Image (cartoon, rainbow, N blue to C red; front, side, top):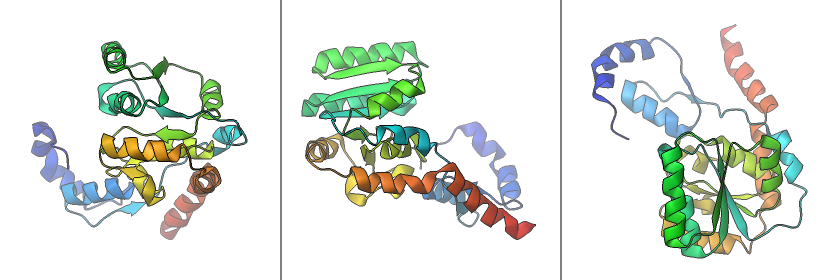
Length: 229
């Protein structure tokens, strides 16, 4: 578990008392285990967040796809987008990074890294969602760079669009993808990315994405909350 700020520990006794009085619903098992450890309570119920899979399914029927990966994430340091740049540099496979521009200096750092490593990556920021959907219809793989992230909605969006996800083993996203689609290092991700360019898992991952629709989320929430009514 990552180190928490000192001020958090000052409030922790009070937070633990409150946590013992309420019911917490977590967005992944990774989150649930962290909450249980920090607050000293039983592992919370897990209900994965809703995803607008229907909108991204518009890209699913696209058949002609390039040997290319897409990464989606806010352009800020915490998203670890340099992993996507390094992945392209090591494999020679083209990639597109799409996200809201939060830290301009971080964007400059990514562009510099791409130039220095010879990575074949484009970085597109503040792209309308319909344009993102179109891009997803052109790629084969979705690469998620953020190690330790508690879920990762773009992973499900990409699966709905028919992209094969490649995600960190240490992440909430790893809980929902076929286990062979996890990586622990960029070297491992590089090897798997090359292999995934030759494999068609489009139908399999698309089917998984259906379990994260808004209607499924509402059903699960209602089933859980109705016990208290």
